[in-house]
Length: 214
Image 1 (cartoon, rainbow, N blue to C red):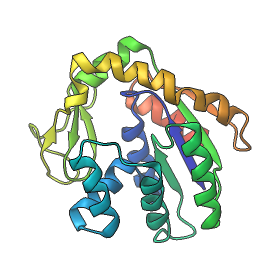
Image 2 (cartoon, one colour):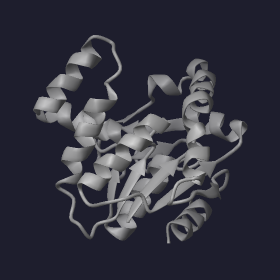
Image 3 (cartoon, one colour):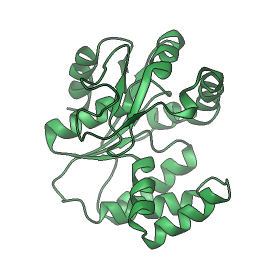
Image 4 (cartoon, rainbow, N blue to C red):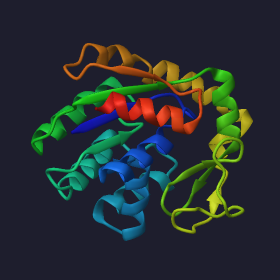
């Protein structure tokens, strides 16, 4: 099964995707994690991505999708796949369909997590991300047990620059302009789309998210 998890910044996509992947022994795919891993390992694709980042440019869709394709070839055929926050545009969605087809897969479920802007602002300002494994915590809702330390791998937790209050409003605006149109796209897609109210506790959201995935 292939699941696409959509939603605005701060809605909890990473938290829910990691948890479901752990519970089902599935594969959690975040393109940000793929980029960091490729750079760390010094792969050919990682070196290309580094070149764009060093120049202050966005990594092109072609390169992102090549990373996804390479990663998918190493995933067991019986393993579920959860895409966390990708695709972000309709163009990426169409390209991802083609990549999945190349490896004998297709999108089976699309889940949209949604919450009020007030909730999103608080979650973003309190979010702390592990620099090693990508796990996400929040000082208001889901804090780590160790002060500034990841509960999963022991790595340091960081407050991302793009979670600073001055940038949050802009990020939400960009989401509405670029990513929200995916909602209509996937409503018309063969996989359909299920909405889950994510402005609640992590446990409540997870129950509904898992039910939506089936």
